[in-house]
Structure formats: C-alpha cells, structure tokens
Image (cartoon, rainbow, N blue to C red; front, top):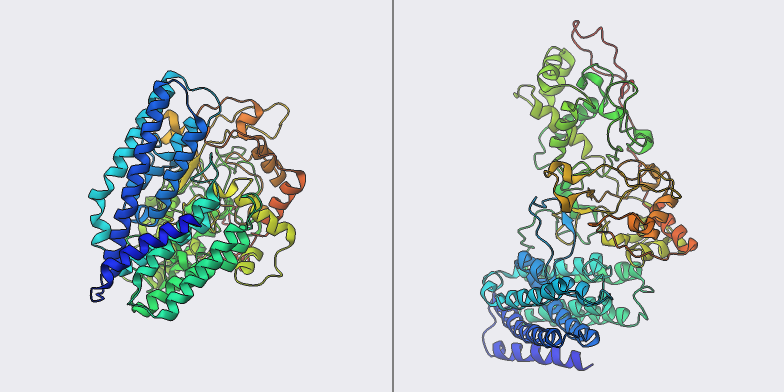
Length: 632
C-alpha cells in the first residue's frame, strides 16, 4: 500500500508541474521524461546504497546475504518502473543493467559475459562462500552497474525527443514482455520475484498512460484504472509463482491491456511508430498471427500466387539435386509435418546420413536465423546452402539454371512468376522461400483457446502450459506464442542454449554428443561449444525424434532429460552449460500435463498436399526419372 501511495505521489507531482500549462501534443513525452528522471534518481541512490553495502561486506569478509538480497531486490523493482523505456529506447543499456545470461545468434567469437543485476544475483545467492576472484567480480559488476545507471541521464534524449506514437509502442512492447517473459524465470532465475516485478512493471505502464491526461477522454482514463486494477489484483491474489495461472492472465488480462493501448492510439488518432519491423503492433494481441506478418507476408504482392506455385513445384522436384533423385521434400515430408521421422536425414550418397536431424518446415519462416547453428540469416540463404551441400542436394545453380532454361514448361512458370527476369539462383531461392512462407500454422487447439474457444483445452493441457511457463522453465527458452527461440517482446533475436545433448537415449549409460554446434562456425569459440539454436515446439508431437541428433525418441524422454537438469543431471561435465543444472523435480503427472500441452500445439491443416505431376524437362534431361518428392 505504501509503495502505491509513493508511486501516485510522484505521478501527482509530475502532473502538477505540467498541469498549469496548455496541453500540447508532446506533453505526454515531456511528462514521461520527468517521471523517468525521478525514477532514475531513485535507482541511482539505491544502486549506490547497494555498492556501499557490498563494499562494507567485502571489507569485513562477510557477505550478509539477506541484506544484500533485500537491497538488490529494491534495485530490481526500481528498474522495473523504467524498464518500458530502457528496454525499448536503450536496449544496449538494458543489457548492461539486467542482462540475461543467454547466447544469441549474433554472438561474437570474442565472448562478452553478461552484466548487471542477474550476475549479482548469481554471485550473491549461489549458496557457497565466494573465492577471491568472485569477490572481485562482485565488486566490479556492482561498480559497473552503478556507472551504467548514472549514464541514463545522458541517454535520456531518445525518450525526450520521441513522439506519442513511439511512446505508445514502447508501452505496448512492455505489456507483451510482461505477458510473454515476465512470468517466467527469463530475467529473474535466482531470486524468482517475478510476480512482484511484473506487478511493478505493470503499474509503470499504467502510470505513463495516465500522462496522456488532457489528450484522451476521461472515460478512457477511467477504463485504464479499471483494467490495470483488475490485472494487478489477479497477480496480487496469487499465493505463489508456481501456482500462478499464466494462461488465465493472458486470456483475461493481457488481451484487455493490449486492446486498451489500441484505444489510446485510436483516440489520439495515431498509429504505433517503432524502429522494430518484426512485430506489427496494430495486431490486437501477440497471439494474433498478424503480429508476425513481417516474417511471412511478402511485401511484393505482384504475381505472388504464381511465385508460390512455382516454389511448391521446385520444393518437390528432384531437378534441384545432382542425380535427379532428391528434393527438398526428401527430408521434409508433408505427411510427417514436413520432417522425415529419422534421427538424421538420408544423405546424397546411398546408405549415408547427414550430421543432424531435419527440423519441420512448418513455421520455419517465423525465425530470424536458420539451421541448428544459425549460420544463415534467411530462408533463401538456407535453401542455397542445402543445394550446394555435397551431403544434401549436391548440386550447383549453374547446372540447375541450365536444366530449367531448357524446359518449356519451367520457362512458362518462371515467366508467370517473375516476368522479364531471367531464370537464376536468386529467383529459384525466392520462389521456394515464398512457398515455405505459406507453411504457417497458427490454428492449433491452443490457439483456438486463446481466441476464446474455451472447450478446446483440457484441464491437463491448461496445467501443462502453466508448468511450461513456470516450474518447468520451458517458456524461458521457447518463448510464447511462437514457442521457438525468438526473444520477446521485439522478436528480433534468437537464442542459443547449451544443454549438453546426449549421444543416445540410453540414460543408464549416458554420454555427450560430440557435435560442437555453433562453435563449428565461430572458429571453435569455447563459450559456444555444444551450443544450438532453440528450436520451435509447434507440432512437436508430430516431429519425433528430437534434439539436433535425433537422440531422444519420445516427448517423455525429452521431458525426463530436462527434468534431470540436462547433461549435468547425468553427471556429465559441460562447463558452459546454460540450461539450469538443478533438477526440475516434476512429478509424473506434471510431465504428462506438459506433454499434453505440447500435443495441443499440433496443426498441419491444409499443409499436406503435394504436386501430382512435375514439369517436363528438355529431351536431353527427360531420360532422368524424377519422382515427386524424390526417390529417397
């Protein structure tokens, strides 16, 4: 109650300062800047107090954990009041203040460790006495944090010079972050105070929306009070993080909050302005597929259907392979949710296999990087890499283009899809990518539940989702609602994880898989060793076997692996393991509930058709027998 009084007192002062002035269009931004600076000064003081406390503790050679924890928690709450602005306007600063200890697809070969409050949590609350190096790191990180917080005064220009459109965008992103990440352990894996922190972040969004007073109707401001009070009450009534009903919050409160932001935009007669193209903020909610149309909607609509039709034929045509016997569909069968059901896919040479498991192509476009090691940044690049790989299609585009140019039927298809453009590698890759972008499935039982069809999920599936996002920690890496590794709320970066994948499903005699993952393409960078991009889990029930090497055959085996704590749980030493080493302690029923939830993500409706015939080639090439989808 006291915290609420303080928050509204500060807000009242800010409004009083500007209340006597005529209401101008930029008043909300000016008010937000003033409130930001007030909160910044408080954060500076609390961070300074933390630095003094730790300095005294280290001099006395005794870390008073409870006192440090309390002070650190106070810093975290103060940061959460400003997170909406810092995370959007100053993302690099947000990383320095509260950087998560994860690897991203742009990870450099030169390792830069995480910084900020999460690092301090890990050091202070690790449970064992600190050695000399850890003490030095603790002090250095706290000083770094204090310096970063001080620098916020210099960075304030981005916020102060922004517009109402940008400010609303930043606030809507924060609502997404609270709902998709705030109730997971993503940025609070040690202290686990994420309910309190989400509540603080929620209040901050409300406070800043109230700064539009004078530019929006009193009815909208009243609705703001009501909707935020209801969402806050829902969080406050939860007795523990483990029992918090995340699905109820998303369906009952996140949706209302998101629509409220849209009402502000409508009354202000503005549209969201954002530097980030990956999310369409005009979509009603983040689980509306329109939110992600950047990933799959082609900006060039000319001849779009013709391009898709051509791409589909090429996807199933072995003309792309060196021996006319393999196609994209050789490893991505429509009747197997566009996988092949093998641990590792068949290679070009008969009897041989490629190095990794074939992922589904369904929803593959909803990513920012491709292949398990993220070595390609686009679908087109991924397609070209497969064509040129001696273990896969084992061909080159000079040969393929020659084959297609000599085919009258293919020439007509390319002319329809790309008028006046000569057949080339770029058009081949573009057409196949356009087809793959149609393989987007967002109509599972789970999706329909989010849209209001409450009879589509069972109690077990609902509990499974809440466990997935909470106790089981799955949602800290497989992010809602895409359930892949693309990180909310901007969805513009993808995460790597090092889990210590086993070489087989023999849990009694476990051994580490030898594939070093991302380190292979980063000159053996040690921090990336055994690191792999977090895969998507939609249609997971249909795409066994699992892991990059297909070592685990069932979802139950996958859950048992994670329940043990990854490689560490099998007493295999992976020094850079990013997956929590602690056992999840999930019961058999809880594991079954999570599996039932994963099964509710299945959706391949309308994605199983293949061409009946293939275009005729020239007489010179016609002697080569081609089978739709490839012979093997």
